Amino acid sequence: MSSVTEKDWKLFRKLQNDLTAKACEVIFIKVEELSKKREGIEHKSYLDLYDLIQAEDAKIAEMFNNPTRNNILMKLVSLKSYGIFTKEQFKMFSQETQDRVASILELRC
Image (cartoon, rainbow, N blue to C red):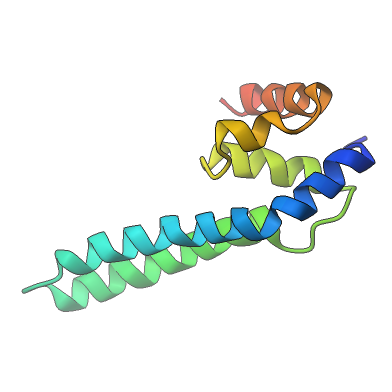
């Protein structure tokens, strides 16, 4: 079963806007870094930007698209693996959920 407790579900819903904002900010930082190095290689930089946006869009979808109680655990895993959670935010979830996320992340390595 991949669902989480009602309390953890509500917590995710409460944190969702802040987590989305942080994920987007991480992307903007990457875009800014890419943009700073574009002089003389504008077309290559544009292609790199296009690839970056596609890759980051897939991550955003993985973390946030269509969250349900049945798929939220994997969304939490993605948030944790992409470094979007702060330690404080992650620790707000139940110990059971934290342990399940950690176990899945260990299996991915």
